[in-house]
Length: 126
Ligand SMILES: [Fe+2]
Image 1: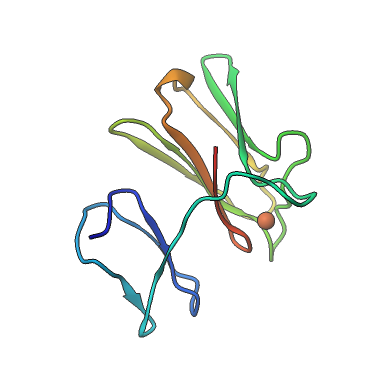
Image 2: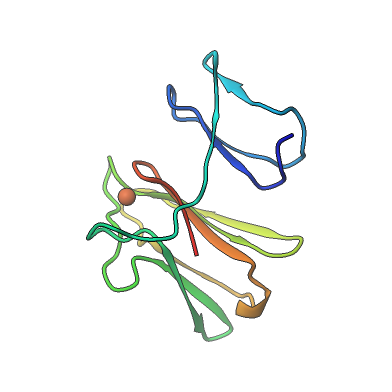
């Protein structure tokens, strides 16, 4: 069975799917099984992907790249940042040229997980 909030990726076409309702044990795209994505949590290269959350005035500021912003170029950028709470998900979609950061008016204590999707390097969380 798929699990709520899991993310799947098609290696062939690049489709990214998030589970909104648990169902079939496997997803298929382009005739091949989609790959369940396990969010990475440790940056090992100079480029930083792990989302960094800091309390800001009235909410939280989430940056991809704590000190050095992740690239936001046409062929390499952060596609979305998601904040997961108990019964709410807030997803902000980004595009090349945007800053790789978002502000949300939520309490940091309510956040279960923050994750982001890099179009080249996949899923990351904090
Ligand atoms: Fe990246």
